[in-house]
Image (cartoon, rainbow, N blue to C red; front, top):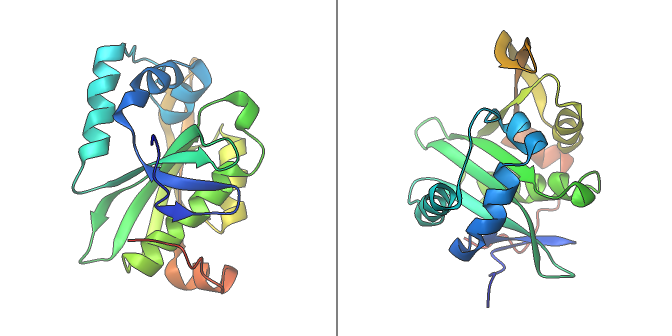
Length: 191
């Protein structure tokens, strides 16, 4: 079995990362659009380096990194993380991407993020979750707002891409806001 349904959604589920997927992650991390949106466009990643990175993500004991798997095809479509956890302040930072252009714009990112937030708030007991997004990434901003994130700050001209500087937008959501938006929690949020 390649993937394990840890957090169940309607159309997809979140699974622990499979280290054998390093070649696919390598292709995705070298895709110009993905690397630009993740802020790593200047990096060139080979299979060995990405395999080590995937192995580190899969074996992390401090952060939660999951594969986003399309239920119908049991196919890996992206990755989502909850990292930089602070259990004293009860907060963490989210990150996600959808790998193939054909899988974007279908609401998979929003569903994965909603599942990830359910896990963060209902299982881990966090109070808030945040993320950073570049101002040019309008598709991601729309996804985050759809899930309930709000802009909480902005670092002006903090990121250089495509020959110019862009703002970095900070967004967050509180557990209480999530509870109002999604009053019936997913019953299958395994620990």
